[in-house]
Image (cartoon, rainbow, N blue to C red):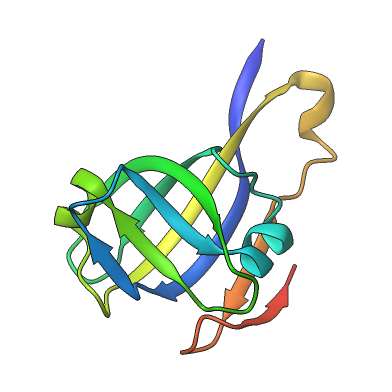
Length: 118
């Protein structure tokens, strides 16, 4: 039996762009994607701390060290520039993988620069 577990979390990033006239996705600074272990086009869940919206989309790689967090397409209706977000991805694990599993937890400063990870 497989169960769903948190794989990665980028905690409290600030939305820098909200663009409804763009094909759906969330562009994320490449340094943050690498630290979290989230791949381009991987499904992600976004939790908006400001307004409580929760939605899914997919990640696209932004320029390294750009600080970009761009919520695009229909999802742009759920996040405004300046909103604080949690970005998460999940993995399906079988019973043998669960005991050793630890998610990649990434934390940023107010400029969306990686400060530390666990």
